[in-house]
Length: 144
Image (cartoon, rainbow, N blue to C red; front, side):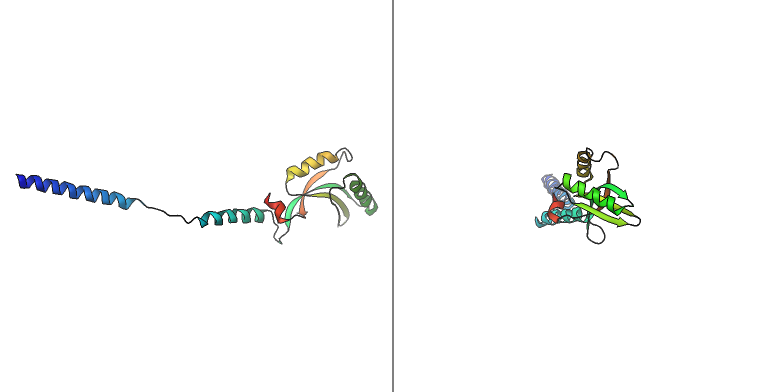
């Protein structure tokens, strides 16, 4: 009888040992290298910059188109007026046959361009449009 009890206790301890060992085999301990966090932050920054670039590496953004006209003189008169009223912004005149287009600003976000367009409505009450364009920007501006 004493032998039976000892065998039962030994069997119970052995079964308990295997159950604990089997449970430990189901768990996985993952040790993450802290450098992975740095790499993922750098990759996020690269992705943000890449989303704002065109295929030839220029920055996508927005400008305010003031006029689109057949007359070169009219386009340059508008450009002169804009430069005198809004000296803080760059003004661009482009020719896409048969039209001369006058555009203002280098905005990375449409919201900024819309706000500036509202400021310009006092001088140009009609015909102001926010258009997508390739803009002049630095990488520091993109990161903000």
